[in-house]
Length: 113
Length: 115
Image (cartoon, rainbow over all chains, first blue to last red; front, side, top):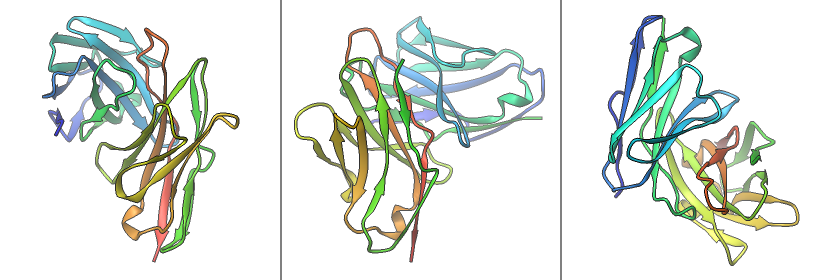
């Protein structure tokens, strides 16, 4: 089975801190994604990567950056955390073929105080 | 731009009754459509997908979905609901044209099965 693992289930950070969310997949998928999930808004794409060192902005990239130095690992970085970034963050991976489904991690619930 | 609409935030169904969770989409090009389910404090689990071919798609846990091109819909269905089906359901779309990897989700529908 495909496994997508996010490093933390719950995080509490202070305003202004630099925050790293890590995601690792074990199925050699080319694509990796970061979404945030908020009630009533569904899942919104922050960034995605289709190869090592390659990235594309999603719908809401402001305040975030990403890093993909190895194929299996995709990191989301909050440069200076703010309270409006309190949310559930979901990582996903998929093959490059568009007719294949994406596989999701268990999510990281981030609270910024 | 591609988009997905799930018109119902909440659907309540009695156990044993058939259920439908609605989804409509808007894309330029041929759509690939997906349904996912999310249980509390968990990530999303894949249920089923439509790529091409038969408009009725069968998936996990007895769920099925019907692709209707003229109505641009992809409703999720199950003939007999179980209490364990209670969860948050998301519809998603991706277009088939080269270069667009984006998977766009709807806002989700909370399904509650009443014993």
